[in-house]
Length: 289
Length: 350
Image (cartoon, rainbow over all chains, first blue to last red; front, side):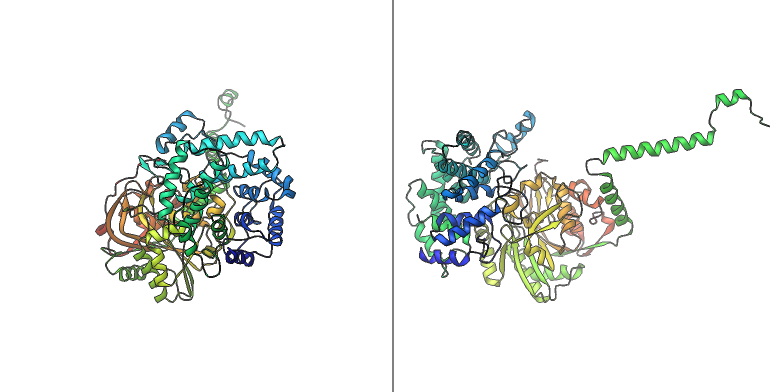
């Protein structure tokens, strides 16, 4: 997609990062997503340096330079930097931060029972939060799995490796627990009282990408059901973000995508972007691979 | 020469007056100790500041004004009704102002009126233009999904924004500014909010009138959860729930440095299992005002709730953020009784 590449090159900020819009604040998430798809060596080096400069003393990343605490975008930074051999130490420190973080577990039996009645979930299961002190949610958990698998592949010889494996397995169990009854995932509440909360394409896609990275197979019933949901939802999707995330996940699982890619590409703007947004453009490019 | 015997001195070592003084001082000290202990979680100084401000507001603040206008359906003259409500309420000057209109687009659930109807947003855009606003944007930061475009498409806002040629800002992904929280109601010292909100001259909360399973009702202040950025606080912005919902809502009502007012879509409200499910109720009313608490309290009465029994309203009114007492709220336009209904209560989850 040369046109999209040119858009991303134009959209890079002077500090080396990318924002959610051209000229907007550089954030860790869009910068990391762009680094996954961009091959220009100069732009990649500047993006890498932007991320390295934002790594905090505790090993994690905030959302941007203005953020005083590490949070969920640490996973994005690790995933992107894992593709750079020279960032081994930064990736290892980031992985250590991620391993030390988990969402609040509810261990009190009464509270656990009440939450099970409300949401039909096991609140004692450990995933990852958006930020320290929060409960676990599907999106940050899925991103953490992708990051830890990438960090492990980056350096399988480190002592971190076995700890990563254990947390990845635990994170996968968390995702299974939060699966929606009709297939797929939403933010992490499959039920509200007696009402089913529907899945969304983006949450389902990121969860399936994570489970694929964690080497879960289609033999797992909740994966099979999620794929079924996603194929159907992507066939009806209208927005660039939904199409891009959905196609990326389906292709990662080696599945047919019908005319979805053509529909996504029909939404590309004259400037080469999707929605004028470097992040969505990067995801759209990832879906083309 | 003393007339008291040595024995009587032994039996009454202090005088009656001194004893009463001592008892009074002991009582005051014990009372202060109880208050200090009871207010320890938030700090006595804060509690005292809120208490004083609340009492000053209750005794000396002028009455809030909330306007009601009849609008039987979305096919009726929504702009006319909105104009009437706006003119009857003491609303901010929009001439030359940068206006941000913040509807409630919590999500789309087929057949459930859980979001602000686009006809109300359209009327608000048109009225802001009439009143000479310099710039108008519609802005929202959805709570349950990251892709707002899907919600805009499903709710009819994509067509509305194109028709009215109005820009939309996704508050979940905007540039951010860190705002000091002056209330001290939570453990948070600051809150990140979207630059678009900070730069606005007037922020118009444009909520749906509905019930909510955590807060009983969701109107103009709960609608401000949408201005909190998802990229920082995640989806569904649960970090803020952990701070205590009444405290966070009080902070959102108190600490935004942008002048705010509210216009409530009560044409068709939502009862029962809100904010996403539940049933439609035809209330046929638009509510407007610039005291957000008074607007929410009036909306509560329109839905058949007693405002003082709603935690966030009770706390915020006690702290002096606004008025919920009916004697402190002047109803302009139509009468309250005309639109009062008894909405089905939400399931209790708090």
